[in-house]
Length: 232
Image (cartoon, rainbow, N blue to C red; front, side, top):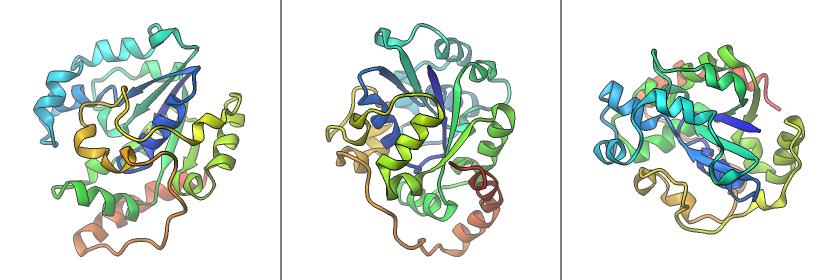
């Protein structure tokens, strides 16, 4: 089984990668198209030069690896993808040979969390429109990060059942600290998840946004709501 897990940033995506990576039957890959996206677009992201230097930047080679031999000869492969990395011209046919899952989170929470790490934030950076576009291309399942945080075991059991994968309790815990499959960008983005050993508890009230952030939330909400109606 090859899982393509699609989500925007600050969306429980790294914790989900750790959950699947803690299973002995899964290899995982952290944002394969990030370096190609940065090189092709010139986007000014934190650690841009280091990312391009450390990771494969050819989108054709990355696409081929998505369907190539699974690392470490594991039976299953989990790929953490961000929809906004899939710009026009990047091969996308490989995704049709994967189990596609779309991880969503309320835009207010994404925007508030992303803003802590990066002041220069655009609608493209948070990827809501791109995520609905990916869903329209490949379909798949939808799961909400808030539901996972509220009851991790129930939701992961539900997800595994939906994709005909036996549940493994090892998905609920992992060792604190950096993980060997982290992208080099982990040094900037993953400090909170590196302190964790499992999923955080249920989320509280929605954060209060400033006027610019509120405008972004307003534009993102229709995309979130469209997918939220389809969630497990």
